[in-house]
Image 1 (cartoon, rainbow, N blue to C red):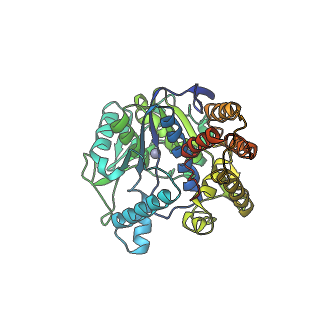
Image 2 (image 1 turned 30 degrees about the vertical axis):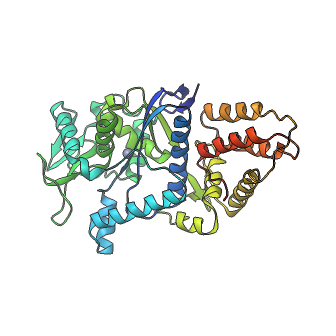
Image 3 (image 1 turned 90 degrees about the horizontal axis):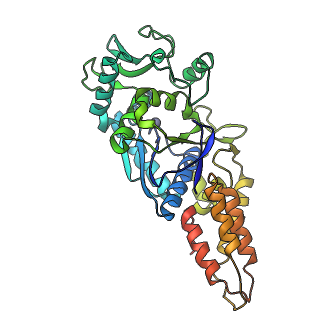
Length: 386
Ligand SMILES: [Zn+2]
């Protein structure tokens, strides 16, 4: 009975036995930081746990490799946008490998799916849900009555948030400032693809809908950072509601540092590479997993010390010798799985392992405890110390 909290229905829901998970990936215009690590470690553990339970899973993650930010960064750095994106994507994957994440089953690039995006846009225009203006195509939010059902935002609350996250309310080609870009005409020297409307490039939101539709038809679980709920995920639903029928929307809360959300624009980043210079991958994962995925948390060195202490304690069990006194671990196992089954409570699950390691004292028969600890380590993506 594995349940996850669905922000759409605001209830914990049973996860289907066959589970397709789509997680929004990076825009590769910059390097990997703790915010990324926190996000992708959580989905890695979710996938590991589903697989541990014997579920059939498909994990799709995308790369938004064409985007205004990439083009801007490429211009500033004098690099070709594709080369810049490829380099940063490789770097990101290397950092995620080092942190112990398994690679997704399908890792797809937006620019490999332009025809699929054009097809959806064309059908939206045909149905009257989107309109062309000056070589650009926009989705008309007034044509989708359910716009706002995911984020629970009212119309007047939407615009300021959308503007912070890439929307241009002053675009004169739009009928409504909230209408969002499906296709935009590219400048002379910018990356572009042929389309029925202009030589241009896709908008951000259509990229994910096209890839989710192609690889899974219907996303059973859709993930990403909580900053993607609006407008990104709200727009994804509007573009093709059939892909998101019954989807469980699971978002990872933000990491804070120095009192503010860790973000490129605020400049308060903790780079994954630097973190891994002074801490083990296990400690980084534990620091992330000590907090529930829906809980915002503040990164600090004292958090890392705590995580390192827990890692040492958990790893202290491997060299213990087993005795013969009976040692019943069933309550620890039950607790561990009960916490994970109830909306992935990784913090209490970790504490259960710590309690178990403390109970493994000399003289007790601890072979089953060690075997359970090995299974728990693999679910959480932790490596036994070598
Ligand atoms: Zn996305």
